[in-house]
Length: 240
Image (cartoon, rainbow, N blue to C red):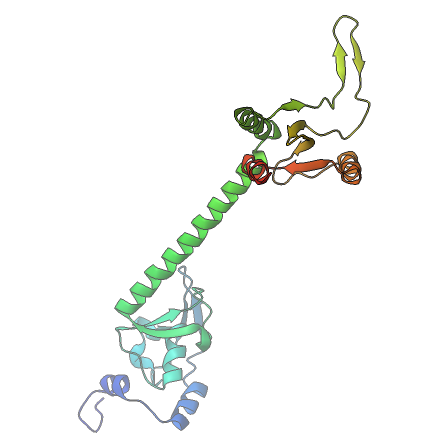
């Protein structure tokens, strides 16, 4: 069928932009035969009537993708084959007009590549953070303690372990428990004063007995440091 200007109906509808009043009429009409089909790739197809204004956009059997039909109704014209309707949230059956964006093929490809790279970077960042959390959670108090003792020896600071697990006498086979619960791990002599060190992992917490011992030290004016890393102790020592 030819239009008044001699062009076919298909060409006229592709290039022609209708008035706002006609747009409203088109959005209410041309709803197709009411037949829809969900593709395996997630897109929804709508079957149009042959006399539909948007039939030039249809493929074999008068089927057209719903997101393209929604955009065409919004613009009041048929879409060109090189125009691509992009789903902003990447959900292919979310065909609300606010979720759709009309772009050219090259722009669409670039947008998709950038968005996928951002998603990949976000996933990698999360994986790295999870790995760091696992490393910190698995870090043993003994390893931190050994690093601290080695550092104190290098600084010629007197350090000793405080026995808080009791004593085992091999000859008699007798176990003598510690007399005081909550004793710290280490004691050091720093600037003529005794300072107690309790070694904890970054996520570790004082027990109720350790907390009670710390509060007693605070009342007596004795330094009690809770250390979770070698660097933390180094900073405290260098300030004294």
